[in-house]
Image (cartoon, rainbow, N blue to C red; front, side):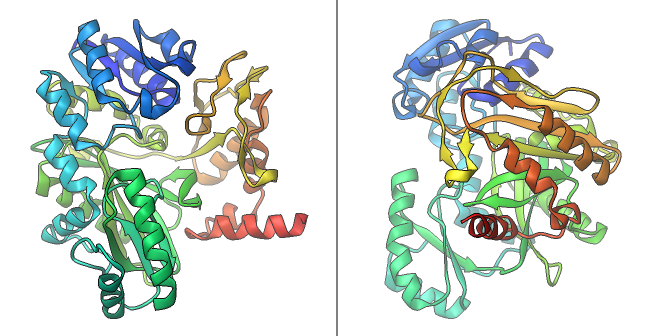
Length: 452
């Protein structure tokens, strides 16, 4: 691998360029008209414009990206996260063009990206799954029949895709009949597939995921991350290790993730996501993300492993450089997603021109961002502008350091969620690690009512 094209933008494109530079790999950035002066364009060795600002006319146009790779002589493509990262058709097109796709094979993406097929693979590997439908469900009548067997409450989920799209929780048949066409339509619009599947809704659950690395023959886990603090099914804060599970659950879950990846001969970095029943301690596999994730830095800080660099090495044909016994963890890391949104106006996005920017620093503080004075927050993409990640000897130290780091962050010109994140750090339930997937939204609702 000598020249890598990054088929993405924002902080993840910057992150990948830096990892490639560390390995002596040249980089190519692709940019929409909105990103001509963006950070990833300034850092890359070459830059290729690929279309107008909307992602549907630029970052989601596979042919434009492949043409850019051909034009610049790139021999590999890294998709980052989002956009085309989990489209099997894109991975196949990259391979058909004679290029290296930095990720698993298209067949594995197709298999694990479909939630129904992924559940079937998990069951074959002896990995526990939430009780649900064995396959996709296409109409309301079929959904009603399935729900009567599983029992309410039911979670409707898009069979193809993720990111919180096409998901509904329903308490009874009447709600199901209303929600099914809505969720199916949303899934069809987002992923081109309106099939849904149904699973039991675990009322008090933690969302815990296991990071894995595989070279096609060997697989190791790189411990777990806690991702329960979510708003509208989008993660807000992540940490590693999880403060809400014991060693028995950790061992069972990480072993299950490794078994699952060995079942498909997984090759690249990936994440197996689980729900942990906060009442019983049972864990259930829910889906796999066949890409690098937004929250990967917390794993890097507790293990010292550069996950993006390992992705690149594996894609270049190198075997895993370590065994499971070589992967150890130390201390605690927490990541806070800072978005250009106004939490006092129902998280209304705030695109615009950035004024002054001051990033936090000091020992064990990392900020992954594309922000720079004078840069633009475009209205066309995700509102994430920075990730503030901190490490400490223990969780208490990490949270104290996080408050200091977030207090140092200055982003002028657009609203951000920074002050809300600082306020969150002051909540006793957060300090105690006493939360589930519904806790953050409950707190936000109470906060809004108190301020009304």
